[in-house]
Length: 158
Image (tube, rainbow, N blue to C red; front, side, top):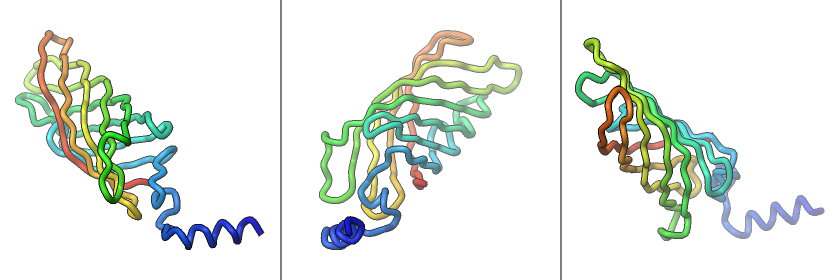
């Protein structure tokens, strides 16, 4: 009896079943994989730990001079209430993480911290999001310097 009541309720409120968790924008315990351009140009992945916190990582080709590859991993905090589009969800996020760049021609590899700030748009009824971020960075090895990184991309959620 309870199952049929829940099914009728889901039909009455217009929700679809593609897939059920994404239709209600429940990204918690979901894994997203996609592509990112800028720094790096490559693969991006994200995992929501709960409805506010997520882990994000990217790896690929580095567009910086004498750099061949870049990888970073971040811990992110999301605010789903700051921007409220008429459809979908648009969380603003910020966080901190680490980065590494592989360098060529005998140059030392770089390591540092990054502090991304961005926005994501999570579509209603589709397991896809798009994002854009800027990430101030502090390189601590092999020398100290600052900079700004960033990227845009998309992910498909499973």
